Image 1 (cartoon, rainbow, N blue to C red):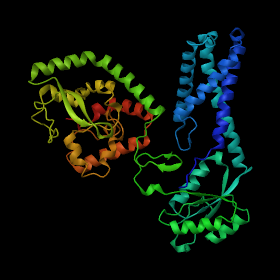
Image 2 (image 1 turned 90 degrees about the vertical axis):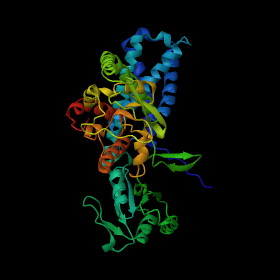
Image 3 (image 1 turned 30 degrees about the vertical axis):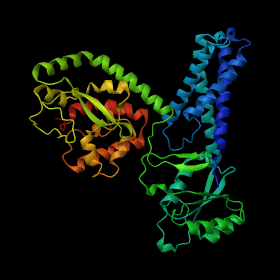
Image 4 (image 1 turned 180 degrees about the vertical axis):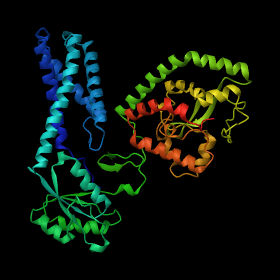
Length: 465
């Protein structure tokens, strides 16, 4: 069996050198500002820091391909990597004699200076690459086989990534002109058929060829590859996975065998650590702030109606595993079986206290404890009763994909008006669409934005009852 090896990006090598250089310069700058910190341990501390940072960066994915990602995510990853490095360095200080020679002030100075240097050097490097690309210096010429949406997307992505420093020669396709979609005006037009591309590749006029033909065109692709094997052009096949429903996709490999995920959680590695730390912090703060209101609500529930104070309902959590979600009891019944009737407007089952706490979402406050214990998150798709999950999974395509991440106290659907009763299939489909969108676009900044918007959505939504 043939194996495919991951391509090593030269830019990542430069970034690794930049980060190591920034650590050295940052420490030297700190020592220059405070000469008393200089000692024989400086070199040892510096080398240890570079080593620790390299290990941390591999875990956090610091040198992944950030193309198309928000700049805030890259900066956040760099900050977390550097902070973890310093924590590791301080930890080593307890078992060695070296880091103890650097004062707390020195460490904080180093902590502040190094990231600034690293970001500055990276920006200068990127500016240089953009300048080379703009003036065509050492630019590689590439061509695309296949006039289709995927081919247009390839051209767009390469154009947006100045680090590649590639210039598009044009598109090539064997189909008649009247069968081809219109090429966007900002892109070069059709340059000819496949044989003409091969001739240019043999003549050295094309450095790289991207094939965007459908995956079903295996025989055509093989013929093209045979023809291009008589040239020195680099050839890439871009598989069109976008014909499938992508929840969250990324490349991986199993002993050199490439695989691509279509349905996967976006929260892994350092992102999972960041989200969990944020959940613990926010849930703890939430419990401390609402502890007295929760005690008051509990007393009113106990005094005004029969039944338990808390209602624990079976719902689906991460990966569809069953969890118990805690709520203040707001009804005279505690349905938790195979049939659960949703609350409706003017529902006779809702108690007097229940009307108030449901309208203001105060009945959800005990879920702070769910978050603290790890079965829920502060932000995520709202968990539905098990009975509702079993009903809707057979009616809505991709319904269960919303369980690829932990359910949340609030979510993107809730701050966009999808709150309350889902008495029609359209309402649930709209909620699921927002849940899928949240999973695709997740970032820690999106979580904070949703939490901020939740405070306004609670009092503005008329669908909660």
